[in-house]
Image 1: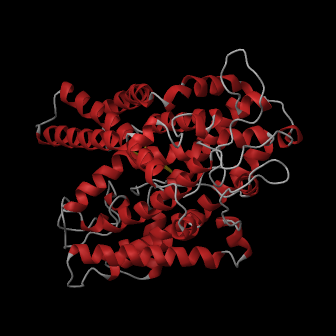
Image 2: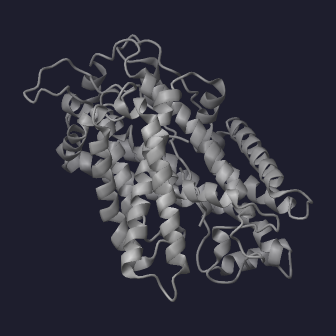
Image 3: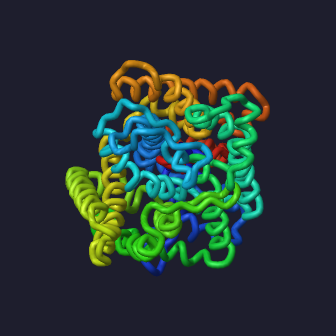
Length: 484
């Protein structure tokens, strides 16, 4: 989970990609990578002049607000899973393969089909968006830090929470799932059944280890092929005025990464080996979006696709229409494929998977365009949500499952139950994150640094936001939207 919350390198940067005013034969503005180079020292980078007042701050503020919004969507997604109209009548047995409770831990008898549409839309784009956002600030951080230090911080900020979630959060969260169908609901019996599972359930936490793996790849590129990422960013620099070209390229790359695996493994199959889970057809798709974000971050937020006054932001209605049309196309083709017996024709399967790639890219563009157009306004609520997003991500699933379980016998409509679960889980996870900051080990999990919005350069030539960004080692984790 989607999951998607914090960037892998902390708070969104201030868009500071123009760090020197040096002429280049290519005629393009220099980037972090141009200025620093793979062997540049931290001190040399620190001496580089910072951006002018307000430069790039619009995109950074919008992306920071998007973090707060995304974590709300993630909690909402998990909150409504128990009330999908397409679920079967009975809950899934804890010991019964294929262990479908990994996706739907609690099944309520009250349903609303509108939740199916909402979840289908989020499943199409949100996870890819999370990987994209998580990569935006990785390259500048690698340019400022030694690779060894960078990776050490990433292992601490991703690996430690992942292990904590596996050992503490998930066993606590899944006890209600066991109780629903258990003959012996005691804690001792639960422990025996939990230990007997052929895998270690990680729910939405699988996003952490996959993001860590991609981070290691990014560090390797910084060490052995830095110019590849620079080239990638330069290729996409024209997205400010021509986002449609970038979109076509992203759709093509997504299709190449997703369609063959979806044909071989189906779009729904998951693998679980010990504590590591992944969806067979999507790792390469997520890598495409991660490297797309890596390239944009290397070239500079304010001068490429995410420029605050670029065509992506100005034509947000076009991207909204594209996202809606692509979603309807994918849902229609998927419905046809599911009705085909015994299996859908190959041509229809290819069309379904191609439409998924299209809907994924268009959904991401729609959200980014809306964020850049309307999200560049300071909001204390969204700031605080963004500041606590990683902690909310770690703890929300525990509260979601327990609240869904507590409301199983309540005589309420599905919408009312979902609203109670959503509001309760968000507030409880939010409060737990704040409380964890008073515990030494809790600081390791959720961090301590408060978010700062850039207003003016600091004495060292860096904006206040960038200085905070360098000191904030917490990760921008957007949890996966569906626990598996």
